[in-house]
Image 1 (cartoon, rainbow, N blue to C red):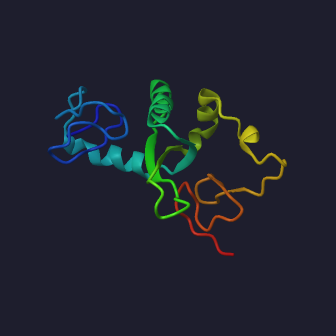
Image 2 (tube, rainbow, N blue to C red):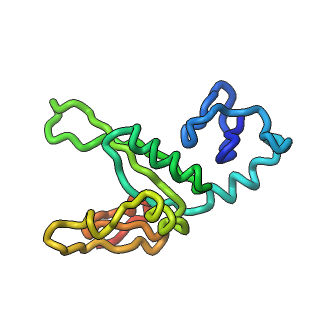
Length: 153
């Protein structure tokens, strides 16, 4: 099964693309078959992704992903558990949008996220760009949120 938008390949039994939220097809509309997919998938999969921004509601993340899709920018939604203050707290999720590093400027223009508005109120921002993928990394992060690159102290 193949996604007609991002061309991701899924195992039999899966009916919707997890990234694009569309129905999967046996064959792509262009007439190519699943056997043609590995080269295209390898190109797409090899492109480094960066975590662009987080959302508290899945609908907000989907809306942003749909906006990017209409402009031909691939993206994926990653679901993470929010750290609980106490073990008795209910589990909450947050939704992160990951996009190709080379398209970060276009994504920022389309979604309107202003990195400077999101920085700390005191104006100090000790974050840095990951040398592997370009994602924004917090000063105290041990790994890159975009690619998982480990940093030494």
